[in-house]
Image 1 (tube, helix red, strand yellow):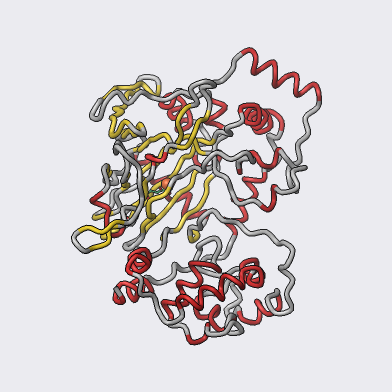
Image 2: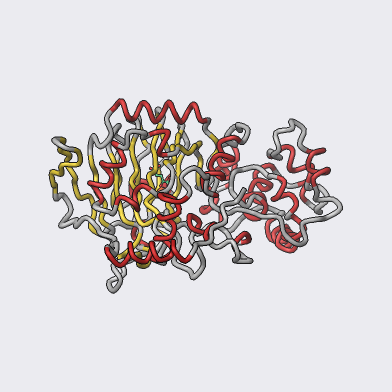
Length: 443
Ligand SMILES: O=C(O)CCC(=O)C(=O)O
Ligand SMILES: [Fe+2]
């Protein structure tokens, strides 16, 4: 059941008193300058080197932040939980217009030959043959149609909601067919597509209870960041990611721009908001602390294309007759301003947002925090993302702390439920990279 929260007057008073006594601030570690090294005691008697790798945003490297045993333990817990294909953040919900006589559950099930609740590439094409021209699309063009319009969460398959949504996006599909059914010739388009899937990895989520029951890692993070413990303790679960050769995550921001609707992590505090279930996720991630859980034989670097750059742009440009897409980490990893090689135990920490100079609370997203994972070439890559979430609305974040830490100790929050459901999904194979190869051949 969804956690519905209404605060009694007494609870509100407690929250306010707490705030008045000790108004929390967000703090940042001063980067000083690139190459600056500080020695920090992050555990009683244990010192760690914290090295500045960039100043805008502040990006820090902390070698041996996790011990080899901790890395191994997190990996084996992740494997036990089950690794699933990574999705991007767009989530669909059943809505008006998704009750078509053809694009419905029965039809979906009839086309889902292997019964795994997803239509893979070869199941999806016949299922969409009612749309004129779709059956004669080449394999790679059909993959483009999926990527562009139909596969909303970018997991490379159609799920029931995406199938039911087809009538709502039919106009776009028709326009797409008019433009592309004969092939893609625009060099800009070809360049964009040759970089392949935005994200090509498997992942799972681990609760703090599971991977850090003794709170040693959490306490280390509190000492490193200087943040109030409540912020660190109520942050997202740990996302463990595994890449194999060809795996990557093209440049992106971990956090969303600030809008005046609620953050994903606090949305359940607004059960009466009639639109809340229709909105895509808005991720409010003040910081990222990324752990390398293994060495990677070749490739798999974490790249920051815009770190410490004078200006920000992700526009594709023409250089010596070739199109350069700076966000394409498959082809332009080495062009990034900062490239960090995976090293077991090292933590990479950076700030996705500015601080609001007036409130000292969450400010605008810092575009220069753009980053991603380059292609693994040889071996494998294991990382874990520890995202520090903060609602830009201070009062909402305080209510969230109260609810998470004092009130709902034994109640699962919405976020935890989503995570558990995700972990329970049936396993899937990653879509073969052949499609990308075909597009590259067409270049
Ligand atoms: O794999 C990497 O190095 C970066 C991963 C990343 O940016 C993410 O998971 O958000
Ligand atoms: Fe990221």
